[in-house]
Length: 144
Image (cartoon, rainbow, N blue to C red; front, top):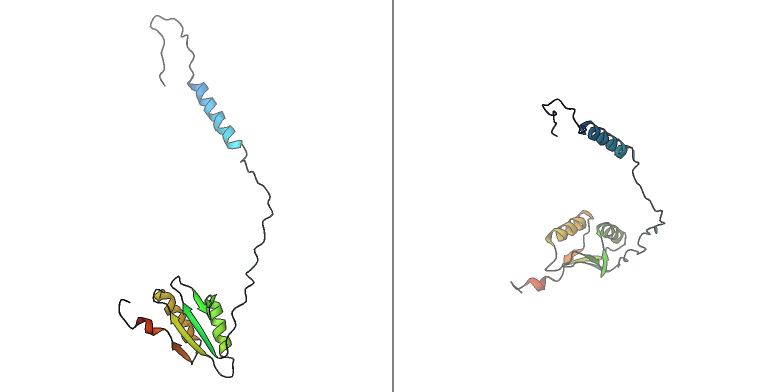
């Protein structure tokens, strides 16, 4: 912001010094911006309440149960999709029978090794004694 010092001939300055005016205007603008309340627009909506899935875990067969690991990383118990905690509960329930049912484990060739290892760890921790791998004949030939 340039300032003029007037003319050398001694005549008065005719233009107004606007620097203090601009400074005051900027201070007022900042103060108005600070004091404006934050615009909070809220709309009250009644959202639906989530209900837990009402699916009951698949029943435990007293003769033979089959655990399958699919290529898309799903655990199937006798053809019904389950998760880890339900698998633990089903294994505990299978140990309550007078004669322990046979547990068959069949991982698909494209199934995740990590998930297969975790399921085997759950089975081992459950202390199931009648356990077997099925479907291994599909891996009898290399690059099949």
